[in-house]
Image (cartoon, rainbow, N blue to C red; front, side, top):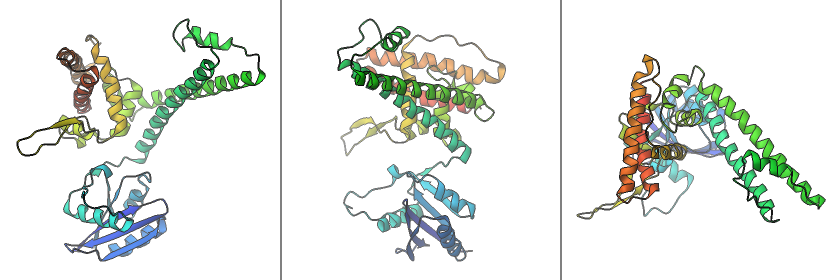
Length: 358
């Protein structure tokens, strides 16, 4: 059998720094910096795999999973590491590409790194369109703020009701300015807002069709039984987490999403902190937004066909339990923000439970 070679890769846009540890050796036997190009990577790893059984790793970053797929294509085992969970020495103040590659290889060999789930290319494409929808939604909000601020500076604040209702939009269309330049600016702001809203509408339609397609339909159908979870939220949860079976228990997904309290205890002194906020920020935000809906009284859901009975039971239980939890915490003096965070934590568990019924 070949000796195992552990390779830590510090991947950047232009270059990759590699550090190779063989067996239990304390110093790397190979250290090399190569261009971040497919041919250079394949050449290095093919040569290394002739002599060793290669296991490689690198940090998840803005470079995505391209490097992972290059190695997978030539039969090299590669894992992507969660950067926020890499052990850090408080006294180590030096940081270079070579030191980062060495650290990755050593920790990888000792089994102290947390591996990130790598989605398939079709799943990554679906994730991209859901993230695009999130970004476009922010752009629409920004465009509305630009327009309202422009009008506020000219003393034209709307006071006859709520902004962005049908009546308000009719009011905006009727505005005229004496100065030609001001009219030009106003018209451009209106066109910008109309363009972004139309783009968002088209994207929502695409995501809706994707959510009811063959690949995601069964999972979306179950998740949307939960209060506060519609197609867009369900697609966000599915495309970001991808594989729910990697979590053995609900507690694991709660911890993964950073919804559990942190702790800093020493000796007899115990100190609990706020939630850890590790893991996927987007999923945590989606769950907290959905958790606000559980302030309202539970409603009886329409019972679906028999194949969805298990998911229906979980959704009904979630409504009752989370509604009670929210108001129990509020009645004990907890602020609404903390109560909603606690509800979001348990909601993550119900999401996990429903996905086990697929």
